[in-house]
Every structure is written in structure tokens, then in C-alpha cells.
Image (tube, rainbow over all chains, first blue to last red; front, top):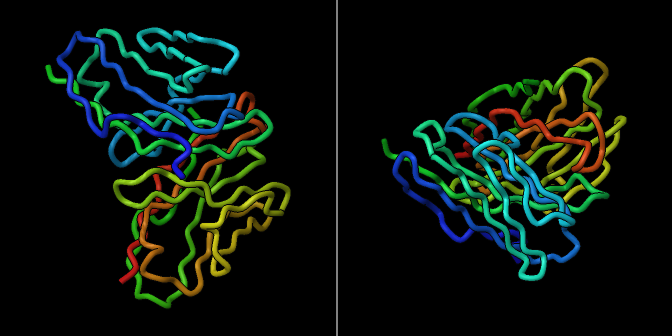
Length: 112
Length: 116
């Protein structure tokens, strides 16, 4: 059973638009949700993360909205830039553990 | 930022052969991990390692897999013998601390293994 699901395999937006990447999870015990950004030929890098006690986390143009009751979250990328084109992985874990469960990833393309 | 280096970036071997994937973690990190990603699929946890011992492994970490980090050297993943289903990209990661809130994982660029 897949623990973390991302609703879109790919997403294309125009430069300047807000890209919204959706994610849901199965295990209510998860309490930490990082998003990783991966460029081709590179390893994933932590972009932004939220704990389950919060419903929103903002860092510059990147914002996570979290809904614990519905067990879903989304990553919003404001004012998307072509340099944001990458694969974004939603992930989840619980505080006592560093075992991270990844979604399949959403490939974002930002067109100039 | 901190870098995790993986060697080789790509290796092609025949089924049944042994392969060793090498990882040079961030220098002061204490916890080490391997993840496996089959093309087009999610990255899946294989194993984590601390103080010379495997702390936790998943069901993907078959008996043919082993990990070690002799003092001052690479953190390695050895597969012996390899099978066709071992073809994947293997990502190494390291963290200074334990627990996702304080132990941010830094990933390498991956080692692509192709088993023929």
C-alpha cells in the first residue's frame, strides 16, 4: 500500500503563475512532511517541510498548506520561474524515525 | 551546501555478479541511509546505519544486500549476487542527527545500476 500519493505525475504552468502540487497520505501517525526538489541528474534536496501541528508553512515563494483531518497537503509555488522546473517529491515520516516515505513525484514544467 | 558523493554514477553488470556502490557522506554526519528508486517510481527506503550497525531495514533489503562503513572510508552498499530486479538508481543519504525534525537528510546524486 502506497503511503504517500501525489495526484499529478506532471504539471505545466506559465512563468508567473502559481503552481499547486497536491499530496495525500495514509498513515495518521505521520507528523512531519518534507517536500524535496530534484533536478535531472541530481539527488533530491529538501525544499520546505511542515509538522502536523501547523496548517501552513511559508518560505519565500513556497508555501505548504496542510489539512490533518483530510490527510492531505499541497505545495504552492508563487510566481513560478523556469528555474523551478524540477520533480517535486512529497514525503512523510514520524518524529521518532528518519525513515521517509516518498510519493511518486510531480514533474513541474514552468514555461517562459 | 553539504554534499554527499556517490561513486560510480552508473554501472552496468551481468546478473549474478557482485556490485559495490560507494557513498562519501557529509563529513561530520553520523547516520547513513540507502534508498532505491526504480525508473518512474517512488524512492523507497532500504536501510539506515549508525555506529557501525544497521538500525532498520525494509523488506527491499534482501539477504543479498549488505552495508558497511569501515573507519574513515566509504559507506557502501554491496549486492551479491545481483538480480535483474536490482536495476534501479540507488541514493545514499546522510544526516547529523536522528529524527526528521533535527536530522535533515542530504542525498547524493544517485548511482544508476543496470543489471543485464
